[in-house]
Amino acid sequence: MQIIHQRWFYIPVMIIAMILFAAQACDKGAEKFPEGTVAVVNGEIIMQEEFNAELSMMQKQLPDIDQSDNEKLSEIKRNLLENLIARKVLYQESQKKGIEVDDAIVNERLATIKKRFPKEDSFNEMLGKLHLTEDVLKIQLLKGIAIQKLIDQEVIARIEISDKETKEYYDKNPDLFKQPEKVQARHILIKVETGASEAEKSKALKKIKGIQKELKAGKKFVELAKKYSQCPSSADGGNLGYFARGQMVKSFEDAAFSMQNGEISDIVETTFGYHLIQVEGKTPETISDYKDVTDKLVPYLKQVNAGEEAKKYIEGLKEKAKIERFLSVEVKQDSAE
Image (cartoon, rainbow, N blue to C red; front, top):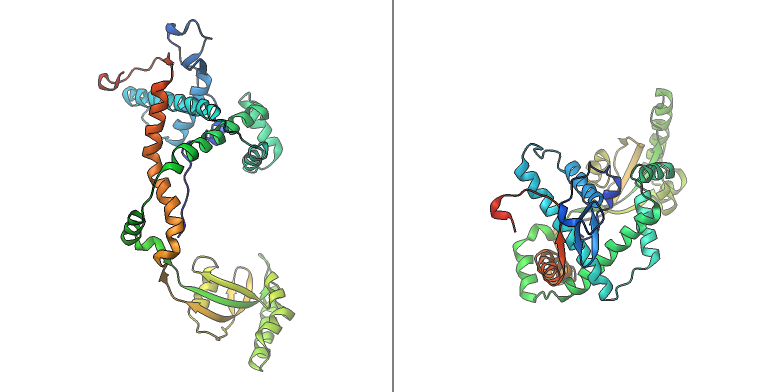
C-alpha cells in the first residue's frame, strides 16, 4: 500500500516563485504600525507584500476564479489572511515549545528547491525578481519546518488510533491493499540507438538472432546475458528482479506477463533495441494480510484525522493570541466578524 503523507502546514515553497501582486490599501486603523501592515499577531506584523504573494499563488493555482466575483474574491482574501495569522501563531508557539530546526535540514530543503531550476542562474534570477535573498528564503523554510514539527508533536502524536479503527478501515478499503501480479525475469539486450539507420538495425537484429540460436543449442541464458547483453543488468546475468505492470515498456511487459516460468521469449523489440526474455518466477495478485499493514495504517489514519484536530489546535492558539486585523476586505454580511 502506498500512503502519501500530506503536509498542510509548511509555508508553501512555491510562494517564492510567484510575482507579487499590486498592494492593497491598509485601513487607517493601522497608523501606529508601518504602512502596509495587514495584521499584527502578538506584536508581530504581517505585511501587505506577504499577503499579496499568497494571493498571487492562489490565483495561479486556481486560474478559473472569476475575478469579477467580488464576493468570492473577498472570501478568498479573508481566508488567506487567516492562514497567514495561523502560521504566525503556530511559529510563535513552536518557539515557546523550544522547537529547534537543524541547519542541515533547511539546507537540504533549499537544495531540493534549487533542483527545480535548470541551473543556478535561473534560481538566482527568480530571487532577484522577487527582491528576495537566499538567506530570507532559508528563514521561511526554517519557519515552515518548525511549524510542521509543532503539529507533529502537539497534534499528530496525540491522536489515538484503535485496533477497531484500523481493522474497519482495512475491511472497507480492500483495493488499497492489493499487491499486483509480478514477474521475475532476465533479459538479453542488443541496443538500437534512437535514429539508427536500417543497416544498424539489421546488424543488431542479426546479432540477437545469433544469440537466440545459441540458446536453442543449449547454452545457459545467464552465461549469454553476461557475455552479450548491453544492459547494466548483464553483470548479474540479465536479472531484472520482480516487476509489476507499468514498470517496463509495454511490449516488454506484455511478453513477460504472457510467459510461463522457465520460458524464453521470441525476439522482442522495444525503443531500447532487441530483447530475449526469460521468466523465472510469477506471483499472482494478492491482498496484503491485515497484520502486515497495521504498522502503516496507524500513522496513515493519524494523518487522515490530523486536519480536523489541527484546525481545533490552531483555533485554540488564536483565541489566546492578541490579533489585530487591518486589511480592508468586503465580505458577505453573514460571514463578517
